[in-house]
Length: 151
Image 1 (tube, rainbow, N blue to C red):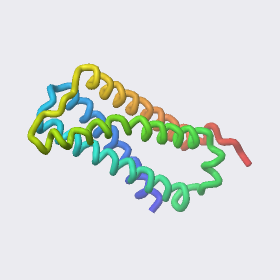
Image 2: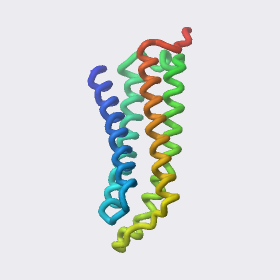
Image 3: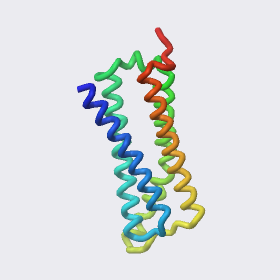
């Protein structure tokens, strides 16, 4: 069960990276009704995947791996959790922007997104992807026992 939980955890993480990349690609193109709706759906999937990563990761820490006591003494684990929270907080702004599009989309109108807003959204997604990559580094360090402050 440990290997399966780890596989699901990593698979969700990979899908998050893919989803964010897809959002960025869609934002590089001129916004249309179809692309705006697609961005909203992708962002909802992103939120669901982040929830799954959190749930599966929590189960791994508590039941399938070394136990919470071990992880609470791992500097990379703590850094990974801080990065996860940061990514979650950073992702609020794009999500709120995409949700604000609901009224326009229901009316069949392409949402307004000026160049500055678009650049900000893409920069935000770049930052999220960078922080997620740092989480992978933390996971690799954790797996090798680097930064473990022994009891």
